[in-house]
Length: 528
Image (cartoon, rainbow, N blue to C red):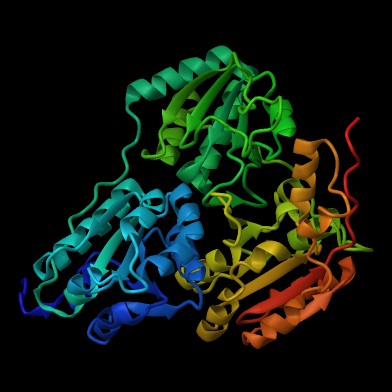
């Protein structure tokens, strides 16, 4: 039954709750106090405080990736939204459904141009799949229902702007959000066409998986298809969620760096997209093509990102190889690493010590270059990547993933530069007593930028440019930072100590941080 004497704030939260939203990640301000008050009247919605808006939006992303249910955010006017936009960008690229609630001044106050007055719609538009401002108190429940529906249908952040007087005024009522249809699987014609393409091209075909096609059922079906046709398997470079580890088919990713991607894709005559898009380089470089795929490659689609790629792969596998099972790779965990911590020893320690059924959030950047192949032998796990490329996502992602998946250990690896964008996530992990192990890959330099400098300028950064890429002088004390946020921490400087620390972390409860001091990196030499 719809009531018309409820305040707008209560109508919004109750509507979202009826639609299955049970968690709201919040960093509110004065204009959101009515929404904060409404939390006392909506006991089914749990509020989780983040000390920075990028933590709030990144945690909502991680929550959706693991639960499949939208979370809500609560942000304060345009500047608060702006602080959270980088991880809204990542969430949009990951196709994560989020109801992004942004408070604004009361309607009669906007004309006064108070200090926090902002064009919120203009800020929200590039990072949202839908933006709406509530115009009247009676619209609050219906607009909240629309936001939730659109976030689910379009799989992205839907931004709902709530003027303060809409939130505190009676005359609203909650509504029942409409049901959203399940994602459709491609029809029989698409399956038949894909089968013809793969049979004709054989080993010169590649299945490129993304999105939901990388769940455990999808990759198992893809491996059956590859075994039956000789086609190669690959995934997009960064993925919202992928099933990886021992006992599962190993799906190689398209390499990040353009030259390596070109070599990886060489000889591909037919590319079949499954919830993915044709590869493009992250950046443009002087004299290089922006697309690493050979120019004469034919590209076709089995499932769009809006369709159920996993179901499509299962249907295609049953068409091509009914009743078959693909052989699994024979993989062995590396030996206990020794010596300094570098990309190789870090990968060995993490693969050896990753707990069973863990969730791994990866933003190790250059420190993780050796991870993909080695992690194929690790215990079965889900991996969440930095899909949108805006750094500072891993710690918030891990926070949201842990809240969505109680009972599973979350392991997060972040470069030291990336971690500093959203280090406040540690405080939320401590407050909520989340089972998160954070590994800070402390190489004390923006190492990837030194490489990119070489790619663009043909030489490494010189003595005046290098300080712009350096995190030394002074070295950042991550163990002290972690303890200040309430998280126990240890610093290690050898591969053996890292292996031991990861082993201990896997058997504990609550948050824990490991600062891994990497050996000094050597800058690349100038190109000749």
